[in-house]
Every structure is written in C-alpha cells, then in structure tokens.
Amino acid sequence: MEKSSLMMIVIIVLLVALLGTVVGVTFYAFSMMQNMESATQETAGFDRTPRQLTPDEIGRVPIGDSILTNLATDSGGSGRVARIQVVVGYDNTQQGESDAIYTRINEQMDFIRMEALASIRNRTYQELSARDGMDSLAAEILETLQNEFQTNLIVDVRFSEWILS
Image (cartoon, rainbow, N blue to C red; front, side, top):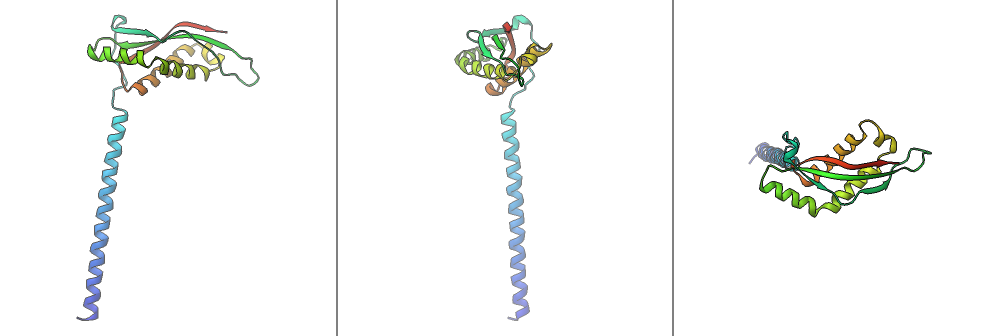
C-alpha cells in the first residue's frame, strides 16, 4: 500500500472516532439536561397555589404552646421579646389527604415549632411591629412548611397570640 492511501485511512479513522465522540458527548449532555429537568419538576412537584377555601374548609392545628423568644436586635438596640402562638391551617376538603396532612403536622410539631422559632428570632421588633409584620412572618412560615412537606394542602399560618415587648 502506498503511504498516501495509508495516511488517508488513518485520517478517516480519526475523523470517525472524533465524530463518534462528539455524538456521544452531545447525547450525554442532552440526557443530563433531561435528568436535571425531571429533578427540578420533582422538587417543585406540587402546585403551590392552594385553591380558595371558605373558613369552614380549613382545619386548624395549634403548634404546641406559645413561642417565647428574643428578637434580633438592631445595632445598639435593646433586646425585645416576642410571645407568639402559631396555628397551621390545612385544606380539610380532600378526605384521605387531609387526614394524612393533619397527622403529619401533629407528628412534625417539634420541627414546625423550630422553623417558626427560627423565623421569629431572625426578625427585629420593628419588622414584626410594622403594619405587614404579622402577614410577612406568616407568609414566610407558610412557604417553609409547604416546601418541607411538599404539599399545597397547608394553606394558612395564623397567630392566636401575638405579644411583642
């Protein structure tokens, strides 16, 4: 065989190998993107917007005793204290699912208290005493619980006691 035809065969083999590598890497990247999409959908695998419920359709669970804690301080501010009773509301219209979420709320009461405590302690007196302070805190706790429980059956967080001093 001539040197030029041997060189041509080597070049063709290298081009085929390069093409195969490019196709393989492209296929791998594409399947990784699909896996990431499905993982993202599993993480956000529930509709966060609960349907509109009447007050009679919301079950309520008080989360233990009132939480008594120090609040975050502004620079040079004096220590303030909050005493807040957290009540979690859940969709009570979904038969078996409502019973299951009620059971989970009761089983995870310590966890819920710790999450609420963390949210309260990170707020200052000024933040909590502001016009939207209560609503803002309730929305933060609600979002945390919906994410942790991966459900939109937890529909409300209210406070049956709210004392700031």
